[in-house]
Length: 545
Image 1: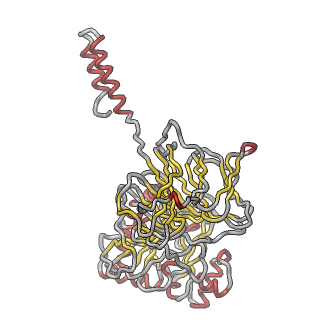
Image 2: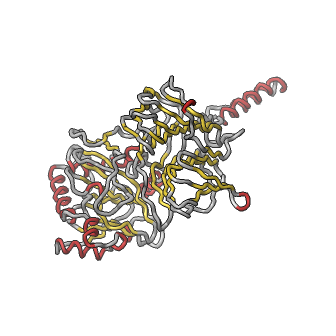
Image 3: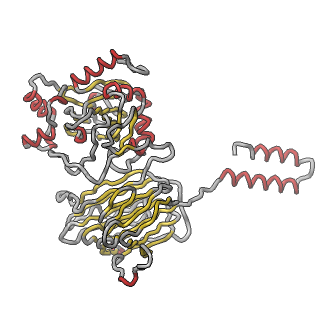
């Protein structure tokens, strides 16, 4: 069926019947292959603010594709006039890699209707296309639950096993490889059994997954540390959803405005519930929190990691990004430098270290228990501050504040911990705040990004309660306030990321120099030569500068 500006009633009826019978429609060409390749490049440079499928709420590039008429008209024909966009992310698979067979965790069962769109962008062909079990959305059971019942490991679920299970439910079941190419899309029910292999010899396959639902469908962020049945969901994240058609009459989801063209980030809160899952086999397990940009930084990432006893995540290494490592639990040994010049320092809960770009470093767990730490890493591509820059800085014993140091006449006490200019920030500042019960400040907007890590107590901000190990990030220019809603002091670390970098305006500088040259020529050249000199210099100082 070719795309039209709108579908007729007969088109909608046929499309719905096909979707209901098979659980999917397509492949449908949405973009030419060269356009799909450009989209893949653009989307590779965006990042979510809150959770791995939050790209559409944080990046205008993702949002614009998710609302492209060729896609949205078909989704509307299936879901009706009220359409909520709740998920979007780039799915990549290197040659030989498998995306195991599954049913979408967020959309298994429940009220409302859902549609997922799998859009091929790069290196998509028969050998790397989506595979489905036709009509499996009607089985009433997910592949994950089937694996749980039969005791089959996720990595051992191959197409033959999946088809065997399907035929035990419906003997007429068939497995289909959707023969696709770059720019093609499949529209499918999230309950459908599906998976992908990239058996191409070369080329990373890239596809865009976009997910929609009727607004009466509650959307929860799953715990990606547990991909097995029964599914587990996170209480600390409310996925941002956008109404792309119609209205929300139910109020069961966090409905937000579409991202603007000027910024693809929003302030966010993540409550870390320790202990976080570990990986005893590998010895190190990172938990991604944020990856994207901000008004201050071209790239900002944040993750929490669990390191097993006797382990290190990597040998001493260095990179251009600057970073801060904060210990959340246990005793960590940070290693600075390499070889005979290597130094080691121990850090406990709430203590941290700042690494400038180019500093050799790593972390090791020399204790008998897991350690958990938080990492901020950032870069600014075109900005290089000079002068006296902040060096590698270790901040320890920060929680040891005597009672006589607390100013009880004010609602909070502040202790400065770190401050200085870095190569990529005009100022990096850190302090510890002790907020009395009931104390706080009203909403205001800062001219810099702010990260807060709650060490103890309970605070309220942005309409959310945040307890110990809660992480808050306010982006530059976004109003925010905070208040201690507990019965004891709230103690938290604050990190401020300033950037008042003013790029050198080379064109204006050159133009001023040429104007000076014109004045100089008018003084030293004979009168007969001045008109020609003025003509040459005027041409050089034209509007193109």
